[in-house]
Length: 269
Image (cartoon, rainbow, N blue to C red; front, side, top):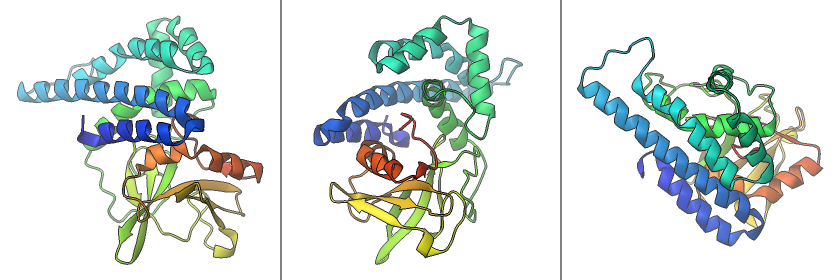
């Protein structure tokens, strides 16, 4: 499970759940979701490897990992129903009662819509959390290259970034963006809004809090959006996805001041 950072995310979530009691419930459930994602990814990877070894020729039904994906949706809904917060559990129960063709239509609609579709936050969670391993799986096998890419939208799946990252480079840090869906990472200029492209530094205030010294809120006074960035130059122990999720008070602070997040994280925070 070490491949693709699954174990790292799970362990980091458990560590931060102890460090930040206010985020313990969210992080505990996130760790369960990530464990399910890791298992699903491994299932698809094994099926794909076996098919390649047999010189598998795809039929109309598609590659074998896609069939495995669809087959695991009901167990995923069961997991959310049993372990998720009330709102998510209720949505899982409702969707579980629908026929299989509705499940497939629901997942297809989310997959095919580059911009997050107009569905409820609970439905968004169910679709994104379940499909995320497949998004990582397909991205890892694609031939898309983005070494010279400079946009703010994911070059692979077309979604918005979910978190910024500052990685050590020389005496400073190099900024990159991480996709909110397939978790692709690409380099991005430091002094520019990741939502509207504003470059005037006077309109791009940055805020931080002593409680989260390695996480900062990058705001834009032109579009009134914000993106949290995890600074790995301050702590190499951080995981951008998990530490962004754990710093809930920073989201509350930004929203109280009229800023809207560029893209909600997988837990819809």
